[in-house]
Each structure stands twice: as C-alpha cells, then as structure tokens.
Amino acid sequence: MEFQLASGPLEGIKVLDMTAYIAGPFACSLLADLGADVIKVEPPEGDMMRYYPSSIATESRTFLGVNRGKQGIVVDLKTKAGTDALVRIVSSMDVVVENMRPGVMTRLGIDYDVLKRSNPRLVYLSLTGYGGAGPMCDSAGYDQVLQSMTGIAVFQGAARDGGPQLIQGSIVDFYASSMAALGIVAALYRRASGEIGQRIGVSLLSAALSMQAGRFVRVDNEPYDIDRDLHGGLVAGIHPTKEGHIYLQASTPRFWMSLCTRIGLPDLATDSRYDSVRKRAALGAELLPKLHTALKVKTAVEWEAILIGHVPCAVVRSINEMFDDPQVIAQGLVERMEHASVGGYQGLARPIVFESTPLGPVHAAPGLGEHTDNILASAGFSATEISELRRSGAVK
Image (tube, one colour):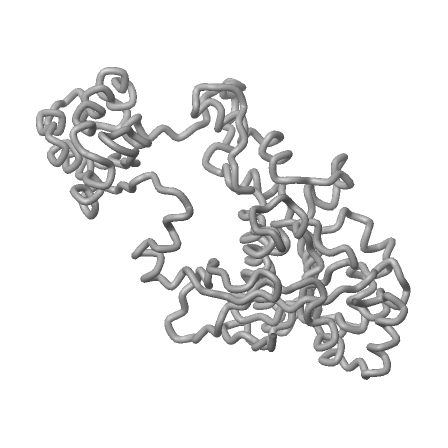
C-alpha cells in the first residue's frame, strides 16, 4: 500500500533505523510520531521480534506496536553490495540509530567514523546494553537482565512481600526509547544551530538507573543497607472492594480528608493520629482494615464514580479496556491501521500533542522488505541497480 510521509515538527528529517527488538525500534517510532521519515533496515531473516510468540498468527503483536510509522527495507549487510548500498543510503540521512553490540558496526565497515566521512552532519545514536566502555561493554543487554542487575527486581519483590520479581512490560526498554529519542532531538537542535552531527550513546544500564533516580541517592557515611524507597503511606495503593480493585492516592491533607469523608469515615479525617503521611504509614496495620471494611460496601466502579475529581483514583483495569476508554479516545490515543498480512488493527496513535503543528496519519509497522524498491529509488538507485541488488541477494 502507498506510504504517505508524515507531517509534524520533524518533517523533512530522515532516520535510518538499524535496530531490533524493542528499545531501538520504539525510539524510532517516537521520531516518526514527530513527523520524521523513518526507514527500518532489517536483515534477510528480519527483526527477531517478528518471531516472538504472539496470539496474532501472521505477526508479533509487539513488533506491530513498536514499529509503527516506518517504511521497511531488507539489506544483507554480510555482503559488500549490501554495505555499499547502505552507505549510499546513509549519505542522504539525518539520523542513524543502531543497537548492535559494540564493535559489530566497525567489523561491518559501517560505523560512525566511516559514515560521517560522506555525511558529516549525521546524528548517529548507539543504543547498547551497558555503554561503550567498561568490563561489560561487549555483553548483550536485555530488559530483564538490567532489571535484575540494577535493583528493580529486588525492589519489586520487596513491594510484594516476596523474593525478587520482574516487572512485566519491558519497562527499561521503553524508557531507554524515550531517552534515545530525546538525545536525537537535542542533537538535531544543536545541528540546526550550526554545529555538525555527532555520535550519541544511550544504554539500558543508564535507562534502568535513570528510572530509579529517586532511590539512586547515597548520602556520605550513611549505612549500606539503608531504606532508599519513597513511602507514600499504605493508603497509596491498590485496595479490594465489593467487586474489583481500586487504586487510591490520598497523600495530601486535602485528598485524605476528601477520601475519609466520601467513603463514610469522617472521624479518620480529623484524627490527629492519621494527619500525616508518615503517621498513616506507621499505623497502617490498624488503619487499613478500617479502610477496607468501608470500601467493601461498593464496587470499584461505584467508588471511582464517587471519588473521581476529588481523590486521585482508578479502577484496576486490563489493557483491553483501554481501546474503548472514553479518556483514551478523547485524547486520540487509538488509531486504526491497515497491515499487509494482519489486516486492520487498532494501536497507539501519536502520544504527544502539538497545538499548532498538524500531524499526519499513523502507518502500520512495515512488512519485511515492504518498501525496498521505493526506498532505493528515493536514494537515487536506478531500476537496473535495484534489479542487480535483488538478483545478488544484497536486498530483498
């Protein structure tokens, strides 16, 4: 199907996405959300995320979700013709994003030092597991590995009164995506001020620690095992109701008073034993049973209707319910797309709103090599050259 270039604040910026899995691909989709023309480069076998288990028969659900808004080309970088073609494509790019292990791009002959010779304005981002230096720089990094290494799994397990536990949903990957997109936009801003391009580094390690900036603080001479966690009081959490669960956040005096009044416990609102977050946390064992008894009178949906606008709260829902959620729809966060093999599907639309910069439609993730010919032609390859590249297997 025809690919219509997007509009937006990054309109005219060309990005070559040489990444796989989640963090790199979603960073490039965020750039596509902003209007960049993003081209996804895949090896002949495709991004490995295409083949992860999925309840969609013809494609991985995660691949669709993190690769929207791109055109797709297949290039065999193990061939000289393939690397030569890539270098030629890069000469007209503004940004290259790659997440190969340190040293792989150099062995292929397409690292930053090579590419910047023909394109000194190139912004080149390397997304790695552990950064470009140090004893682990050559190791493969994955979301769950970094969760385990950096304390996230220990913290999650402690929060659930158990052993170390992983947080589902590849949170480190997605946070790294945002950091990568931010770094690229910042480098493009500097380039627009007259500077040349530059290389940028983002790692899953830096993302995992950045996510914990509120805990990753060590005061001089404090005990090694000191509690580093933010405690909002036991009221801030998920609570059972007559039917379903509801999350409540009533840390401020105003919200605490409003909660107590609206759930039928006005005496708690004026009880000096509970008039601060610290006091409520310390007396949680006697306070929580009172709250839970009151909440059992109504369902989670009923309590949400009573408390919304007065106490920060939400019924605990599944992701499935978000497709039809009135607030999600009102924000334009769901859009229907068409895919060559999957057909029609709904997915995330652009998550950033610009008041005066119009954004175009969202495109589905590309099929493997779906736009190879068009991409090569746009890069100046003749029909004869494209045919020869296909014949040799350098592209598909």
